[in-house]
Amino acid sequence: MDMTAPLHRPLSGERRFFLLLSGSMVLAVLTGFAPSYYLRSVLPPPATLQPATPLVHLHGIVFSAWIALFMAQVAFVAAGRRDLHRATGTTGLLIVLTMIPLGIATALAQVARRSGPPMLDPHMWLAMPLASVLGFTVLFLMALALRHRPAAHKRLMVLGMAAMLSAAFGRIVFIPPFLGLLVIPNLYTLALAAWDVASLRRIHPATLWGGLFVLMTTVGPIFVWRSSAWLAFAHSIA
Image 1 (cartoon, one colour):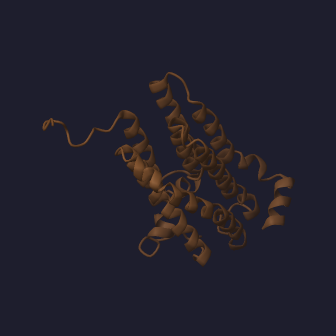
Image 2 (image 1 turned 180 degrees about the vertical axis):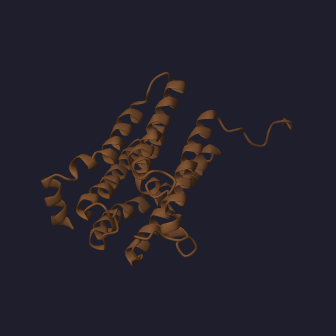
């Protein structure tokens, strides 16, 4: 046995890159939701913040569990423990299948609570959270279907997370809401594209098509939420 061999392999550039991307997502969630949820008993909450209902608490618990598991799974891969990554995959699937209807229910409940931006009709704003749920759901299911193709799987997982980060970045007080809601989530697509070009000399198809879907679900709502068709739909389901 070579006693001079290192006990731990150093992180490859790719593993370090995806670990940093995932860590920035967790940091965004913790920062964005600290005043309104995680630390609302310590930090002064926004003046327009509505009291948390049992549904809001359930939503927060389940989504927080997913964020923690997502970070853990990325860390497992970075550490070379794909066995743990696969072992926790079923738990992740169960959490996500709970998040989808829970996210829709919470979005609909926001209309009655008028807990969206005060300057917007809540039926208009409903387009944003529902589009986030759609983006996350579609990209996660695609990532699951391509779990045996690691390059596509990891990119779609990151983009699925990016699709749901508008709510987090939009709540960070030192980031203008426009940038947090519409621009910053799409920077993850640009980061992936830059990594693809540097490492593959091309943009991976999962980055291209997944990134376009993130763009559609983060920016698309502002082009439809004033339309009579959307408002009629929003009133009918809310």
